[in-house]
Length: 167
Image 1 (spheres, rainbow, N blue to C red):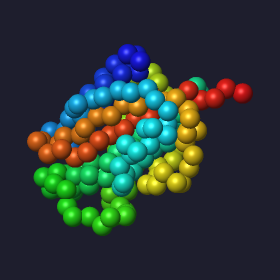
Image 2: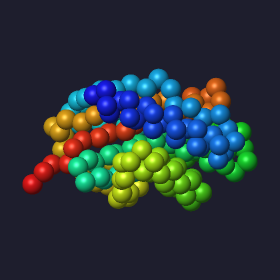
Image 3: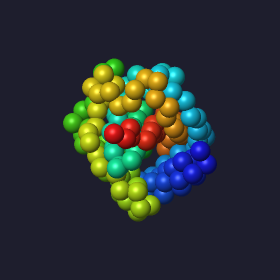
Image 4: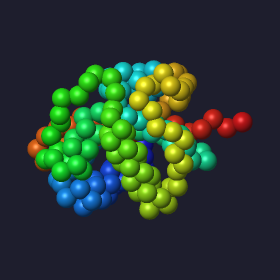
């Protein structure tokens, strides 16, 4: 547990520093929580609208969900705004937001590589129904951290992780 938690807390710290440098913005991940539970108990924590990346390593599968408000705020900041969340439709991202979301995950993947944990991006998605990431009864690690841009709470970043089943 502590290895997973400590690794990902440091990863998020470095990730937020890199994003802050690139966007010239105050971005932080705070209130980090860890749980180990079955995936069916963890699934309700996934926001209604999110952008997710499915990542794989030889022995581990990661599913990282960014609340849509994180993507909206960072995209706003990237395009010259103050990082405010604009009013958005309930069910989709613009092409700019999807592009920035993929860049967001590419930057996170770079952080995994810096830490010696190379992961491969399998795909990004916006609906859980697009894939079966884990079995419902599979025990997973869940890290939940709140994203702040300035003093504005933008929503959670969730990192689900489980060992790949060995054949």
